[in-house]
Image 1 (spheres, rainbow, N blue to C red):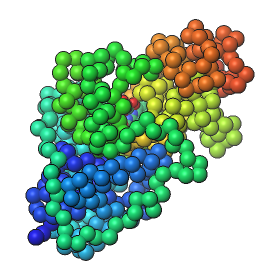
Image 2 (image 1 turned 120 degrees about the horizontal axis):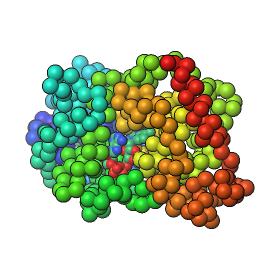
Image 3 (image 1 turned 90 degrees about the vertical axis):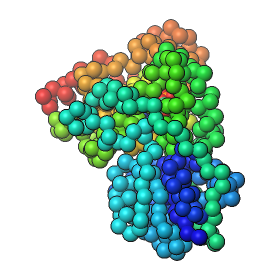
Length: 455
Ligand code: FAD
């Protein structure tokens, strides 16, 4: 009997996974994950995501073993490793889902030169590149993109997980997951990550828990003190649940605001398909000469460090940055405030923040991260204009962040709602909590002066 390899990447699931379904029809199946830390231009997976990846791979292996199969782990340049494995096992072809980060597209091209590679759609609601304007162009602006995508929903019916998977006569050798050292040890900073359950079962449970709240999402999604969002982003990034399945299950009265957010994820993949360097290059080249403060300068480096550590003196920013460090995730409203603060208050290049998020977020995604950073910075093709400078203190009040701050900034846990958003202003700043790195008005003036230099 012949068979095929399934090359797994950020699609670590069995249900609604067209690569598994296609391979299963061909005979035996060898599921493979290749850890590639070698290829130049391949962005190494960040620290927080290594933790997630370890758990997710362990979970997928356990699910495969229930079906008589297993996960083969190999390390190296994906195209070489997979071509060698195909030769070693006599696999007829390799099935995989199509991915859009530039390094994945390079790897797909390199592998297709060596083996019969069959790529399937299944990472987005609609294949990136398919949603186009009447004139056939890709959308630059999100809202018309969303309308065009919504007109083509709902997604097709789900593909059930295979009940059994055929096995090769002999399993090829596999690395041991423990030997990949994906989990932090010295120090182990991942204690707070136990709020997560990586893997397909954990993803399904998150979705079930969120479904009763879908209709309330619009009213609660901006309130960081409440659990008003789905927490599905890392599961979606690693493909432990298909976004199509989330769409189908969440659909119903009052669901549109949530479904619209799912479409942002698709939009971001469309942007990086059209502009593979979006994580490095300004969407608007007019920003190329922007006079960012230089992080090599010790004073600027101290500002950047204070932002990373949640010690800026702005409680809402600090709460967000500490939530990020502790759990690998940050509430969306607070991501927007923290990103705007880095770029506009501290005048530090958005790329520095993008890199920090890349390393610390469990949901770090090349498309979503770069699109949202460029949106926040005002440098993107569909951006919040640079001159709209978010006021962190009034945002904090408006979105009722007092409980959120008390939770993540223990120095402020004794302060009441009236003073917690801006303790310094009310003479209520405890000695243990830092002073503001820069006042809001001074920061605003500095940012606008910098902008005028490129106008
Ligand atoms: P929900 O509000 O429940 O939304 C459901 C899903 O929709 C999310 O899981 C996500 O897949 C998608 N989604 C929602 N908002 C966005 C958005 N603005 N852009 C893209 N997809 C969205 N999201 C990432 O998945 N990875 C990132 O690396 C990332 N970096 C970001 C950086 C900045 C500066 C900002 C402002 C936002 C970033 N986001 C990123 C978007 C957003 O903050 C997260 O997707 C969201 O907070 C995840 O929480 P949730 O799953 O509870 O989202």
